Length: 255
Length: 379
Ligand SMILES: Nc1ncnc2c1ncn2[C@@H]1O[C@H](COP(=O)(O)OP(=O)(O)OP(=O)(O)O)[C@@H](O)[C@H]1O
Ligand SMILES: [Mg+2]
Image 1: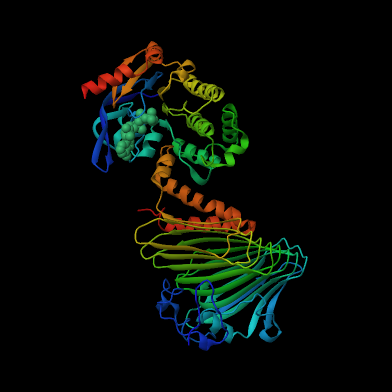
Image 2 (image 1 turned 45 degrees about the vertical axis):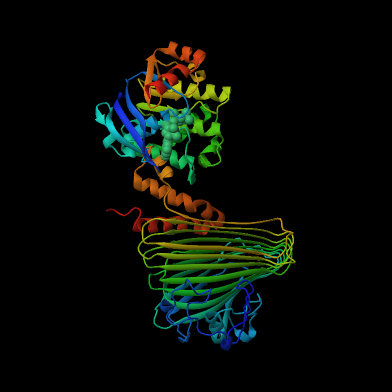
């Protein structure tokens, strides 16, 4: 139950040759209960947008605002953002050696809720969530993301989303690297999450494939650090047919 | 007269103190050690102090007690002092604390030797011999605590086909100085798990060598250390592969915090000509938690035969991984808690591999206590 408002967001990263601007003015509102898809070619800045909203230290916000239900997200620390109800399913989840999935999930849940979950119901909930995502019970004993297959990493991200139950979830290429069965399983997870109550979802993807399973309300075309076009689900169909070429060319011409 | 040592991986020992001049600190083996803080152990401080108390807990079937040198098996492991401290201890030793596990005994409970230092003024010395008979299985845990100035020789002899877990836990007070020279001899098809856990002390320097008395032996060395401000913790390891089909696997992990915290890890492995088909891997990882720390890490592999199954080493010293912290924090976990998780995680697999249930809880608690000094400190 959250509304995310991004207004004229400019973001740069430090490189050896100075600062490089990656997001060049992004404006986007994702309301309660809405699912927005962001589609764009490699390197267009999709992950940069996701990480900037989550507060990754690598990215400098040079101007613009991001609010969640009117609260200034950019003023919050990374963990405060999560506790305010933001969740990012990462494109490349990070290994944390020696920290078990179950310990990690319990610690995160405790942090988000401000109190430890009731042990018995929690264990049941975790097991059920993992089972729904086709992850077996021993998964909880493994170290976070260590030695996980690509598909396991993505399913683990969705398990976290379901268990932590944020108001607003950003999914960064959760579909990439999944075979069709895994894609269905992950999509079902996202749909379960969306059905729970009016969640805001920002679905970042490369391919239209996942949009067959997760119906977006809006589709945005992301090229060269900006939203180049937007529309309804039909825009995804058009991208499927024609690709990003016309937008990329336009961006190049625009300089 | 000094010893003729062509490579420090072919050390030539001597029982004669005259062969061991007072180190100056420029020697390869001493260059990391703050000699001034050794309270004369390396020079000529008397080693006759008695400011300590030793309590032992021996399960059924294991004999633990002091034996006069003349009636002891001192030297059983082949230990020959290669440095002055060890030679001095050897010379002054009158009795040998002996742990004897009879052949074929299966001892589930650990033997505990609890050493409590009660003063630093007079240096003390000691000799420990752990002798495990053929095909026996045992665990021996030496726990050090309190204040001390201590130099010791430790011998570990693992009989053919036997299995020993030998743990020393250095949980010293801030003013302890502890020098330990250890030598292990691992029998045919025997296995030794050698564990060193070092948290406390002003200067702790352990020099551990291990070799094989037959083919098929297996040595696993595990170390966990946590150095605070001003502490010097040095673990020097040397596995001498002198027999075919032997295996050694070394994993040492350390964390450092506070101004002047200094750790040294030396991992020497020699694969002799006759040691065909051996396998060795050594690894040292250090996690630097604050500014002002120094972690020295020197792996060194000397190979005299090409006929080996595998040999490798890894050494890495780093700070907190920003990506790990970001990942945890993006799930609502506060920064301190995230750091805590990462450090526990860093040590967890090691603690699991030590696999002495009686120690697991204590080790996790000690890591937690160390963390509260810095990483989790309320600012
Ligand atoms: N540290 C950096 N130095 C230089 N360029 C960087 C740095 N980090 C990111 N970039 C650049 O920023 C651009 C956007 O990257 P980002 O990961 O946001 O793209 P993306 O749209 O998510 O791509 P993909 O579809 O491959 O995931 C890329 O051109 C990338 O090379
Ligand atoms: Mg990306």
